[in-house]
Length: 528
Ligand code: G4P
Image (tube, rainbow, N blue to C red):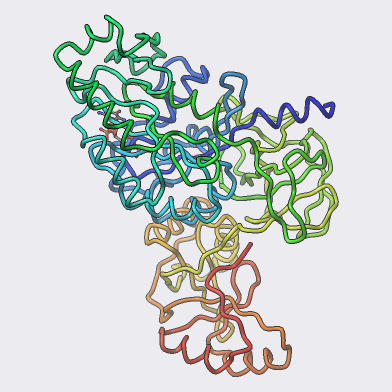
């Protein structure tokens, strides 16, 4: 690739994830986005019907729909001269760690709000994660085909609860049964709603000018009151400011209905136009520009068994600079080794296919046979490490015990691999041969035992364990650290990544130990 075409390719990339509360419409909108990218003819094939989702975890239902889960982890599609990369995030909050890490790999986010419910818990949490990096957020108020809450009130809620200024781009004309379309306040265009066109890309029926006869005819009795409403909205809301959006201070908001595939196109048009190109990324030694020609990237997610025929694990890498070309050598920085990658996969067209070339902003999948961990940096030889990919101290702990003691090896291996993927965290206490697993949410435990059985043929049971929290420990003073290790051996463990960890039985114990060993740092997050 020449310099110029490389720069142009990078400038086309738009890499984002969706943040929303479960049921707001993430899956539905994803289908429509892909439909708009014209990859599939009839929407509805991204994910099967979620008939028993209350009873199963995301992972297990993904497991059932395995063929489809491949496509839903990362999707790449072309749209209006851009290349859009959409990274999926698990819906269930028990898998929040995975979601947080995925958010480190994107350049912007799309926030979906259920118009009937407004700003919900999980959106607030994810928004807080986005705020750590000032990630630009574009908003979509969904389900206009239903009776939703007053749109003005909804935007007020976005501003007050999420602490971000809202700038409506279009405004709904009616709602529910009376939903007639949306009015774009910047282009003075009405896009007319046509129900029943959810599974196709319907023709965009427009009326130019709110003053036009066609607009009067459409709005009929409501015409005057709609004019007043627009007047009010213009006066009370923020004017769209792209700089403020890029700085994460303002969210442009679109209204529509994902189910009817209406308003999604306008939103996507705005998104590809305004959202950022691949951003520069910090490392422990310098900032890496997306436009640099030398290759670099980091792994933010590992997923197992994406293809039942292969039984392998895929490490998802965000390319931060340069170009991946088939067969190239890259430096696995943590291991200090050069590796030749011939079979990276891309996610174009929702298929898992071998990629010949990918650039900054793209996500590629590396086959992982146990040497790649979340957070690993790959480079062209430089030994920097991308920072800001967090690992959170688990909040729930269980001792895991085998039903068949002969299978200890498989159990160890299974837990090791699941912890490298980020599915759970495993701790090996120094004082005995227990295995303690830690999780952020309860469902993670279920997934771990399900997968141990399914993939590693190990039946394990959980038992309560007296651990309140875990802290990764470090100390610059070797002598003091030795003393600490000797005196606190009872509570020390090694985690799946080989890091020394203090397992505190109670909050008080942790506080006292911290006080007793001021030189030792007790960390509740660890960078990968
Ligand atoms: P999620 O991935 O964010 O959890 O949400 P999902 O897209 O699965 O949507 C949740 C429910 O909301 C689904 O209904 C979906 O059909 C519905 N929905 C999404 N967008 C709209 C919209 O614009 N208008 C209306 N009226 N409904 C919408 P469900 O009955 O729970 O599931 P399903 O059986 O239809 O799959």
